[in-house]
Length: 121
Image (cartoon, rainbow, N blue to C red; front, side, top):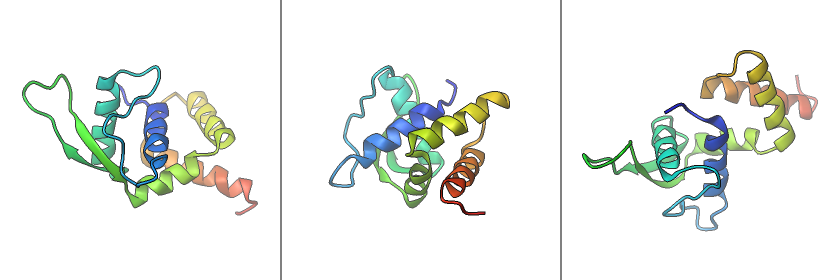
C-alpha cells in the first residue's frame, strides 16, 4: 500500500477534533477503507506522529494500530499542514517535482511556506 499524505493529514485532523485529546476508537474518513486508515495510523505511529497500540495479529489483513493521541511531532506537523491554502500549495509543489516526498521533507516544505505566510525569513 502506498503512503497517502492526504490521508495522513486527515487522520491527524480527525484525532485533533476530539475534546478529550484521545483518538476515536474507529476513525472514519470518507473515501478511505478501514484497511487504509489502519495501515496509515500504523506507519504514523512508527513515524512518531501519533501514539498508538499495535493490534496486528496473524488474522490481520494489514498492519493495524489503535490510535491513542497526537504526539508533539504530530501537533507540529499538523500546525503547519492545517491551512488549506498552504497545504494545497505544498502538494502542488510535490506533484510538480515528481509526486512523492518524505514526511520530514514535507514538514520542512510546510514550515517554509508557513514562514512565508508570516513574512519570516
